[in-house]
Length: 554
Image 1: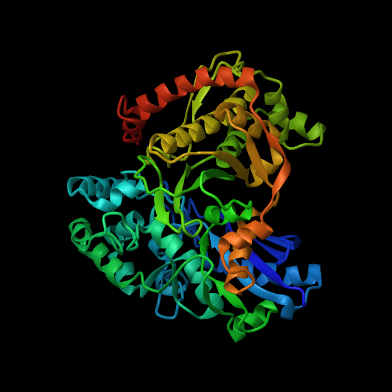
Image 2: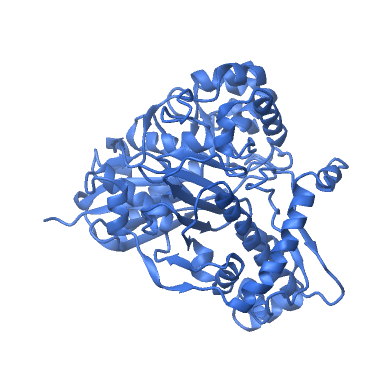
C-alpha cells in the first residue's frame, strides 16, 4: 500500500504553521512556521491610518503567504511526493473575519477601501465592539431570546455579530459593498478549492448558529430576525443575506484543490480539503481526546478550555455550546481566557528592570526563562501577591472586555519574580473558575489535559496549574496539537478514516509524564483561590465598577 500523508495548517494570532503527518500513525515528518508579515495591526493600518483603542486587525494576504511558503517547504524537507499527500485540513482563530466581494477578494485590497479600517480582517482579539455586545445582551435578556442561554447568558464582544454591528454603525458603506462577510477559515478554504462553504463549527460558536437538535425544538439558524432588526436593520440584512455558504461539519470535504492553487503549492489538483475548524477545537482530537468529560486547556497567547459532554446544559459564563462542534455525537463546550501568554509578554516588555535583562543575557537565556527560574524558587503564596487575570478583558465567565488586570499586595520588597509568579497563579485561578462553572452547571470534568507552547515549555506553570486545580494534568505529545487535529480532519475528508473520533484514536497521543498536584501547595492555593474569587466577584460582578469608571476619564 502506498504511503499516505496529510497536511495540517494552523493559523494563530501572530503566525501560521503547517505540518506534514503520516496518516497511519500521526508522526509529524516535517513542519514549517511563517510569521505574518504585518503581524497584528493595533495602532495603524499598513498605510499609517490610525486605529482607535482596542482594535486588532490583520492583513489577508499574510494568511495566503502561509500557504505558499510553508507547504512547499514541507515537501522539500520531507521528500514526500505530491501524489502521496491525500488530504489537507486547516484551523484558524475564529471570530476572525473579513468582508469580500463576489469573487472573494477582500475589500481592503481595493484602493478605494484600503484606508477604511472596517474593510480589513478583524481578529478574535478585536475588543472595540463591547458597547455593541452590551446592547445585544440587554435586548436578548429583555426578549428572553433562547439562544443566549447556550452562550453563557452574555453576548461576548469577541464574537462576530457584535463586530458586524460595529461595522454597520460606523461604516455602513462597507456593509453594502461587501458581497459576503467570511470567517477567515472559510475564506481560506474558498481560496484553496474555489468553493464557498460555511463551517458549522465556526458558525455555531462564533455566529450563534443553532441546528435543529435544540432541546426546545424551535431554534434553527441564526438569532431571530426580529431581534436582530431591533438591534439594527442593517445587521439583520447582513445575517440574512451575507453569511452564506454550503454548510459543512468537521471532517467533511469542502472540495479539491484548484489547478491554480495546486500549481502554487506543488500539490496535485483535486486533493481533498476539509471544512475549516477553530484552532482550539482542532486541538481536542490532536491530543487524542475522544470521550466526554476530558477538559483540554489550549495554552498560548490566550487560553481556550474545551470540554465535551453527553448532556446539553446551559452553563452561565461559558463561551458557547454546540452539538458536534468539537467531536461528533457530543455537546461541545468552549470557555477561555483572553490573555495568558500575552500577559507574560506584556510584563517582560514593560516592567522588567535592565539589571534582569543583563542577568539573563549573561546567563545565555531569555528574560522569560530567567524570571521563571527565579519564580520557581518561591514557595506557594510566598510572593504575598494576588492578581486578576484580565489583562485583555475577561472571556469566561464574565464575558466583559472592559475588565482589566489587577495586582494586589505590592510593597517595597516586591521583586519582578514575585509579580511574574502571581501572574502565572492568576491564570491558573481563572481556569479554576471556569472548571467550577462547568461543574456547577452540570457538566462533569473527569480529567484535565493541556497543549500548546506553554504546556510543552514551562514546567513551573504547569505544576502551578496542577496545584491550583488540584488535578493531574496530561500533556499532548505534539508540539502542534491544533495543526495535528487539522490534519486529522483532512484525513477524514480524504476517506482515510471514517470519523474524527477514529482519527483521534489512531493519530493523537499524550506524553508519558504528567503533572500531579503537590498536597501542601494545593492547600495553600485553596486559600488563595478563595481570595481570588472574592476579588473576581467584587470587581467583575458589580460590587465595584471602578475598572469601567476610570476608563471613562480619558
